[in-house]
Length: 119
Image (tube, rainbow, N blue to C red; front, side, top):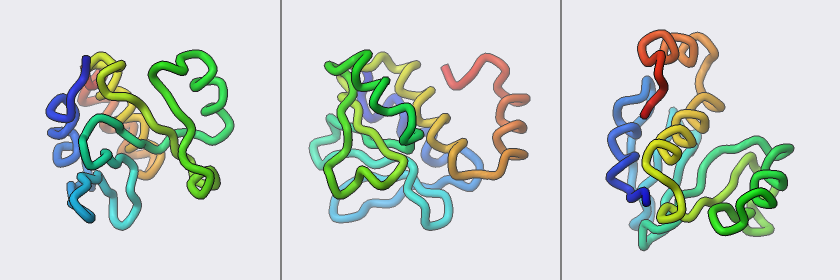
């Protein structure tokens, strides 16, 4: 069972990433691009995820993942129930979301510095 504290450090540790609060909600950004956002009660984590793959992910684990609201379907975005994720899995989703918004050279540098992933 993951909680927000399992992934919060990544919001500041990942290159070019920073944490902000918008209307009481914690969000991780690179420049102005939000790649992770938490619900007000911090039980749901929304994160960047390829549009083409999200239907398959939701179908494979509907107890963990939900599609975003209709107005957010145009974005590369998906929601996950934090309690249904294990901490390592949650950190991997955060890092994968970060990879979608940074240059590939930063992503490759992260892989070299963390050969076993964010676990």
